[in-house]
Image (cartoon, rainbow over all chains, first blue to last red; front, side, top):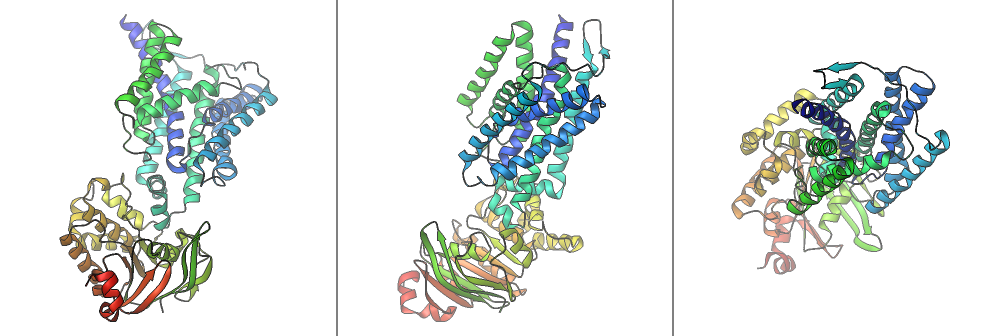
Length: 289
Length: 235
């Protein structure tokens, strides 16, 4: 029993890692742009397909493919900023609807380029860390955990300790007041879109060998991410990370001891409960932070 | 003339907010814009700092045209704008707010010196440097907003309703601070509903009524003007 608990705990840590990468990016984009990016799940999918194209098909080293996926999806973020969100910036609903359109475009491109079948990606490594006979952590999962810790720590440092990080937080809290300090809102929007998209892309790229890659894989990712940011408080980066851990633990344990459908229901119920008890989310204080 | 606006007009959609407004700010002086609610005071200030585009006219700072620049470039030319309602960054600490005011500056030694100056002027801000800005009182937030503006090392400090919502004793304090800042050579543009306070502090005054310039002149003359006394001073 103790083994099962430990193993499920490890699975939860892995799930929390990639969920928090996706959710933090979503919150960052919402905070700075004021737009809920419905295409965020498809940015995750695009990162996974970067690994399909460069690692599985072109036989480049896995981490080269992941780095390329990060940059490629970051650039998709820049494209969204320029083509969708900037022209629609006085129309918050417009940005949201445009992101839904972009989601469909990305899905269609993936179908056209790769087909609807599930992609087979050769395992990156067969290595497994054995804590005991029944408690095992595949190294491929460890990569995801390490990447999440490193990237989220780097993001925290960037936001709290650097000039542009402050500019980003200032424009998320009050864009007009930020402009009055000489901060270019266009520039902070670009930075937020690149980072937010790249985090989703790297999560998709790293998990590609571990999940079933297909053009519609973004759907479950975006639903999970929305639950997490609502529980954590829309606009709160810390809230997104903590809610990712809470959600991953609950979902993983319920999946293990009951099944996946009940786990999904439990996750949604958790969101409803938070909305009833504290509508701003666990860490949200206002509409935007 | 440090700042000169000639015949500026601003519209929001089809609604005209201000028409043919001309204002000049001499170096080292306090200029005030008074008027009732919706007279266009805030719009005028927002036009000067580039927050709203002007439809006609021109704005020059030290001879350079600035009305074509976006707000974040105008700051670099030396205009600091303390917006209505203070608009501090609520989730940042007091010190982060102040340092954000120096965002564009590269003269790091002078920035540290200016930060020390702001703390000397506002000891309360030094005490609360690590505290989140939203936890402070209205008066403290106003001081933070002024301190943040000073951190950009401006030539002109523009303030929109600094007395709004503050207790009379704090308003007194703010008035003293404005005089001190001006005494050190900084030009001030003060927008106020509190006409008594504004006319006491200012050298030059403008009176806006429904988007038009109604009166202008030396502040002490306007203070004695029949119309101003009846409409704005309640005497």
